[in-house]
Structure formats: structure tokens, C-alpha cells
Image (cartoon, rainbow, N blue to C red; front, top):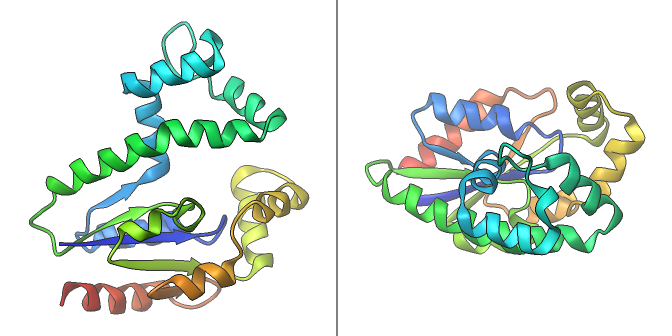
Length: 193
């Protein structure tokens, strides 16, 4: 079974492309969603976050206090690296276990915006990068998150440039005004061979 990474910058349409692959019967592991769940349910993550950031990092009902943690990361950027160092190994292990349950499929996909940022891309047989023009991406995120263009641009500056992701990828999906489905079907056919 092939392991395929699906990545792209903010506003490129990773979630939509992932849904199309699911419609084709391909299992998709959405890293952000799994990480959120694991931050609430995994005792290793919980213990390390509590030790690092204090009891306030979880609410009284034992769920992650995302607002509190986001505030720490905002004021202390190195805290993001600390959180990632705690969470990413557990997510990686969880993905490996998840793959074992999907052995009957020709390939599986892990969707993650930070495949290249973290070096995670090395764990995949193939990488698919989704890209779109910057003005389209900014507009999408502004609508989706109800935020300003300046905030979106600031987020984009924290990510690896699109051209670098494209250069390191095996497949590129263009999500401007091009038709997505034919691009996805072409990649799916290739990966099933």
C-alpha cells in the first residue's frame, strides 16, 4: 500500500481535494483533526502539555483549552515548536496504526499543511501539492475565517513558499479556476497502478 502525503498552503483547498479522494474510496487521515482529538484523549500528550504549560491548558471538563494555548503560542512563538514536539510524534504513531487498518486499499492519504515544514514528507511514497494563486487563497481564507487580508498574509508568511512545495512534490493540483475532478482522477488512476 502506498502512503501519499497531501499538502498545500492555507486557502489552497486541501479539505475539498481530500473529500474528492474520499469519494473515490480512498481513506484520508486529516492530521489537524486527528491532532485535536489526540490532544484531548492521549495521556502522553496531556501529561506533557500539563507539565509544560500548567493546569490551565485543559478546562475543567478535561478538554484542551485551545484559546489559552493559542495565546501562549502567540506571545511566545517558540511554544509552537514545543507543542509540535509533543504532538507530532503521537500523531505520526497514530497514522502508522491507522494505516495498518487500511491494508486492503491501494493507497492512503495523510492530509497535512506542514508536511515539508516538519520533514514529515520523507515518510511518504508520493506527495500531492495543491496550489492556487495568492489572491484567490487570501479571498477564500477571509471568507472562511472572517479575517482580514493582512492576517491571512501574515499566516502565509509563516508557511514554506508554494514554489518550494511544488518543486518537492510528485503531483500538483491547481485549484484556481481549473476543474479539480479531472486532475484528481488522473492522479488516482496513476496511484492505483
